[in-house]
Length: 256
Image 1 (cartoon, rainbow, N blue to C red):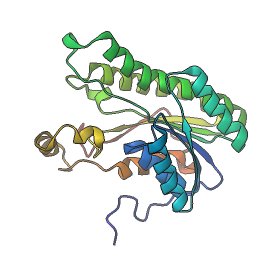
Image 2: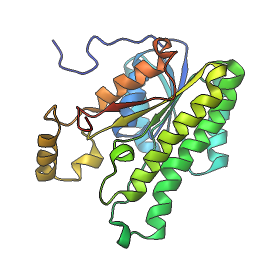
Image 3: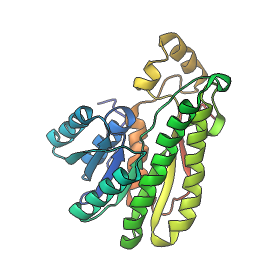
Image 4: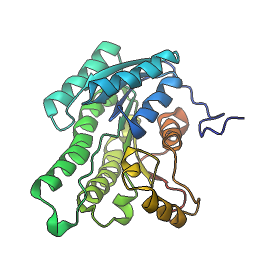
């Protein structure tokens, strides 16, 4: 039997349209592939067109339907164009996964204005811009799923990540507020807060640090991108229609 986290887990999203930001690598790539495998038509969004092409190719070669969209998530014009193009040309917009994010880690006394602004603008403003644009279409359709990829750093904080933690805490607050605004239109908004997940970002920490981190996690290992993708599939599905304004922590028990 396969040991893949997705083994045996099925969600039917046939006919639905999804947008995934930051889909060129890591968590976003895994989420886009999982949504495509579940029948959704996926708009894969990122700045790196070459890496996006690889994500789209994997989805289509598996029998799914996907297209790449280059976009600067910090630009209102760029975001509105992508969202409106997908919704108008594809006829609907059911799912938005706000995953695009960056880090610029350093202790606050040494943190530059640009290191603060880059992270807040990409992670928090990008989520705001995409959520605002998508919510207009979802409200008219009286259906939608917005899923914000936050982080345990936004819950418990992390030294050297004041900018990143603030951006992710902001995403959680945005999730709670927006859920109250859109709940009556059958649009749900939830957040997922991953812990330490195997990715390019965590790999950069080095083996010795990751070994120490793993010891502090009750599950005694880092998570897999597919395990976060499984949470996305659930929240995107009709089965989660009565769940909104919540933050689902996927961290192997690290935050308790």
